[in-house]
Length: 255
Image (tube, rainbow, N blue to C red; front, side, top):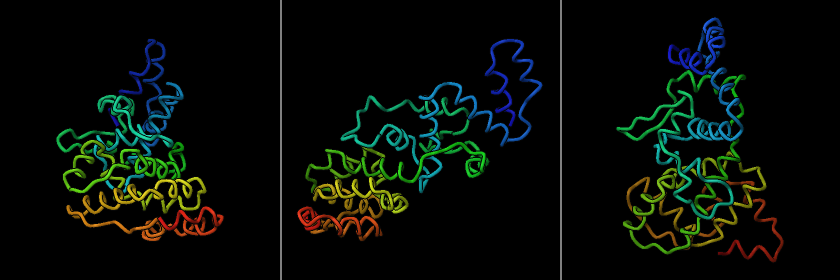
């Protein structure tokens, strides 16, 4: 609370405004969080959108993210076919722009909210608008659709190397299905599922990375069709959409 009050005062530069801020300090954490988001909005749409991305991923991730995973998550946008390393933001900047709402444990690599009350505030009616389940699902599917996953892979060493290059894939491989189920009613998500997993190679990578992340080993995923992927992840509405495709497009289901 003291840190938020200090930041509230130090955000002002003119003596008159500093004195006024001292007379109107936020007295509780919800009020302090509202002031933080108000300051973020005043810094422009780009900075606000970036903070929303950061906060959304920490809020909705199924497990605690590492900073490397978060950096890739916020750098990936629907429509990307690969991730340019130049798009990755520095960890210090990510923490700084988030105005004390998040913390980064450099020893473990994990990033999270600076206090449990941030999570409580984001669940309140006074919370700013964050990403929707559709937004989260699209990023996960975009990641699995990268062109690099058209390359064949036959060893655990290659899988481990890929996860080192794209650490966010470690998270996506395990949780994309959960996030996509939450957005299964969205037509764009349904189409994205089909466009990604019509590729046998991308199906293989998705299944193999998940197996490797969860159990540390590999197994033969060949023969897993698009419909297998949809069914295994409980995407009932996507399945319905696929089955209602015109006959000349149903050939996708056999690959």
